[in-house]
Structures are given as C-alpha cells and as structure tokens.
Length: 311
Image (tube, rainbow, N blue to C red):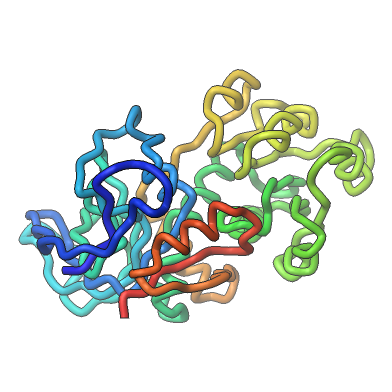
C-alpha cells in the first residue's frame, strides 16, 4: 500500500510517500480502507520526535491518528463492525508506528465508531481526535447547566467543537477567543467572540459582568492563554488544558490527554447527524502532499481542520 512515512525525525521534508506492506488484521482489529485522514498538531510533534519520551516509536513511522473510511476485513473477535461499514476513528495505540496517513489501516475495534451519515469522508476524518478532545476536557472541568465557559483558541480544530459541545452540555454562555477575522464564524456557532492577547481579562470581564469571571475555561493553545486562565475562573480547579501538563497541574487545573472511546465518539456522531454539531474543514490535500498540509497547520490560524484524501 501507499503511505506517507518517515525514517528520521525533523522538519516536514522527512515525510515521503512510500510503498509499505499492508497492515495485519489481528483478532480484535478492523481493517479500514482509508478514504481520508485528519491532520492534527500532534502529527507534526511526532514527526519532530517530541513524543518519544511518552510512547515507544518505531520506523518506518506512518503519522496520523484520525481516520475515515470503509471496513474491508474484521478479526474473529470483532462484534461491532462488518465489511462495508463506513467508520471514523481515533486510532491511537500505546506505541507509534502504524498511523492513518495511508491507504489502509488496521485499527483496534475500540478506536472506531460509525461514520455520521451526514458527513463526507473528509469531514468524518476531522471529527474523532478533535471532537473527543473537546468533549473530554469539558467534562473534566465539569461543564454543565447554566455555566459560563471560556474557550481559548475557539476557532481552531478542537476549539470550534468545544464551543458547540459546551452548549450541548448545558452551558448558558460560551465565550471564545479568536482573531477578529474569525469572530463572525464563532457567532455562527453560538459563541460570544473576544480577541485574544493582552487585555483579555478586561474584555472577558466586560462580557461576563459581576465579578468578571467565568465558571470554567478550557485551553487548546497554551502560552499566554493558559497563564491567564486561573485568574479568569472562579474556581481554579475548573480550568483545564490539553497543551501543557506541568503548567496546568501546577495551577491546580486539569490536564487531559484524549482517549479513544466508542461511546463518546458515537455520541458525537449522533450530534452531527442531528444537526447539533458542525464540522469545519478548512482545506483538503491529497495524501502525497501531507508535508504541505502539516506546514500549513504549523503556521497556525487554521479555522477548523485539515484532511488528507487517498483518492
């Protein structure tokens, strides 16, 4: 099969289109004919070698944890899926090698869920990692009925899901940080937009009124946003991040590293098909241009997600 892989770590030019063996189908695994693979910041962090202290890495290494495609074979212990099913998945395992930037991927059954019927394969590949990240962090900080929630980097791949999911969890007001060019987009998603950067505390306070603080805050960008979060929430335990574990834990907040979860991913898909969750794909690239897709994402300011297509 054709796959984008690396044999050394570094800049985007270490990625190349290669001919690699088809993946094996173990007893509890599902072989997926990949139609699209989502591109995420963790992909270029893996490419740079930054996660080697957290997971065993093996080369040739195929990046990618998001997939959307069609089941072509199942192991004998698989019960949820059959050949021909359209699926999406967050295919993360406890080692890094056989990712989704490929024509085929062998995925543990637990990492997959039915593809929302209303989505294209490209849109489907944008949902798993980002949607699960948003949902699991919002739950970790206890977002519920009547809350006012601040979402940092609200127009990004994870942030635009967090804005919408917070409302489904019961939040009465969602404030989202973004550049001014994305304020209209956030308004369409039901958020009150606010410009990020210096003076954020005052701008949030003006939107909230009263003590000028929110009930919960979730961070998807780190840096200044994370530094300011404890001062923006009434209870520091109700702010969280997926970016900088040491900092957020030192602040008394919550750190989340997203986990594959069939029930969570199925719930997100049902939200999509009900019209309650919008999936924003900024751009698609053919598989062979994965390096360019990663370069664009690394530049920042991408609204929504980027996807790779295999056909």
